[in-house]
View 1 (tube, helix red, strand yellow):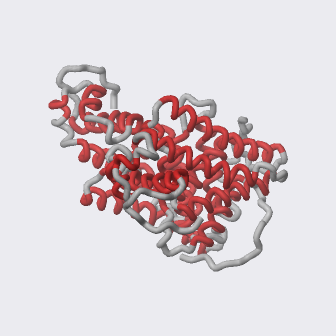
View 2: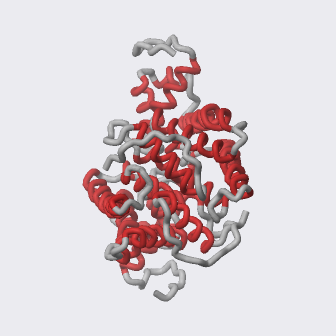
View 3: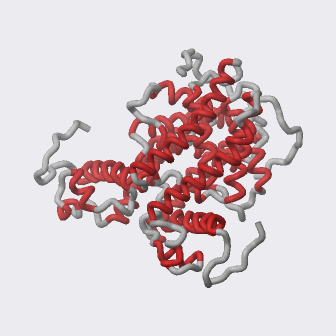
Length: 216
Length: 216
């Protein structure tokens, strides 16, 4: 998608792409200021729309939060679940899942991931939808670990505990990784994948022989 | 400390113990409703004090949040850092750190841990204090991993990335563990410690020979 020029006038972009942009900006502001403290005016100002203009795209603050969470789960579906679901070997599937999810957070920033925790702010109906989508993803990972357990490859741990632990590692990236930090993204992704896979597998096969010097 | 009877009348408990109780109840409400959406009235109602009575203990909402975070960091100091700081062997120190921190969250519940993330809601002065205390703890763990790296025991990963990854695993417990859930606390703690230690160490020594059947 070509980069758009900034304009304060009526937007000419596709409604969908514009909405995506609003989600990202809103997520960034909500993470910085807190969901409750963020006003629709803050977001309108940041995306260069009048409040009325923004209501063309967004129905209200709770709805916006729900849209951001749905957008986050869409990214998981498209970039993590869809490309890995058919990988037959469970170890390879696990590695691809971790690498893709972590890589996505490192690339696009963690704000939408952090907002996925603000479940309390949703209406019950919206909460049910998001909870269901999270559970589906959780189940996919858990079943992968269950398969590894059946093959004798999982450490002697409960597959659910191991799945929660993996999600902790992955989701937490959004809280500590700084794109302007000292450690290059490639190093973070490689090390992180190693840590995650080794946490659950007895003797993981090495997928990449490339050596690198650990920074300290 | 003996369990106190519930009373709506003027509290006779020590101010300090009463304040601890308010922190825990407030943390639970703030996690459920969100920090901004929680009023001082909500908290006063839940602890059975008038709003005026509560102001005897608590100066205001931001101050209360700061006190809860300080309380959480005090628990880390007392229950995690102090009893492990002098363990000479870094592997043993790491295992003790993980076990004590995770164990503490499993025991007292994760609300105060979750609130430690609400840094945006603090005044700059309070934020500096909490950030400093978090950093000190982070540094202690990082130096332990650095020591393990020097001894050739750490996986070939950057010690900072490994430290962040450990904190992700530990802190996330507060978001998934349910005391009324299917998996007994002892199993969670044992499995979790195994996952965390194995994620960073090449070949961890086994600290406990006790076998148990993995639940699924």
